[in-house]
Length: 118
Image 1 (cartoon, rainbow, N blue to C red):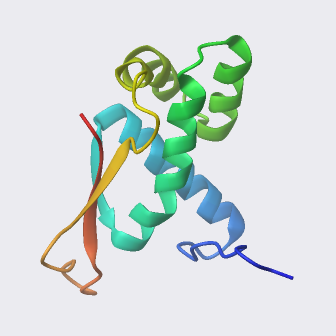
Image 2: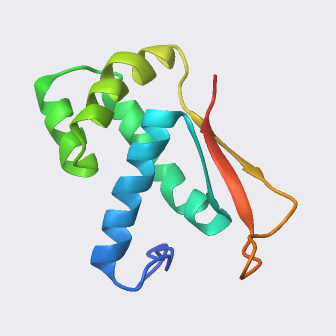
């Protein structure tokens, strides 16, 4: 049975979805806040939360795992040195999604911000 096996269909193929997720999470870590469609925000939230939890324990193995998931050296360095230490005492809920009132110009897609909680 396929219980709870749904993935957000945000890309045209699995490889496109995977690379899109890597890029969005890398940008979220580097900038702290990004603006994208609501579906993409909901899709990257669990991956970002798991990466921050992984980065709380700074080991070589965890850095390699994070690099495998992000494929961005600068984002991994910032994740382990700046982002994860801020959340040491927090047990979860590192990101926040804020819906925007207006849709995107062109296709009227629902837009949102996803940001790291301060």
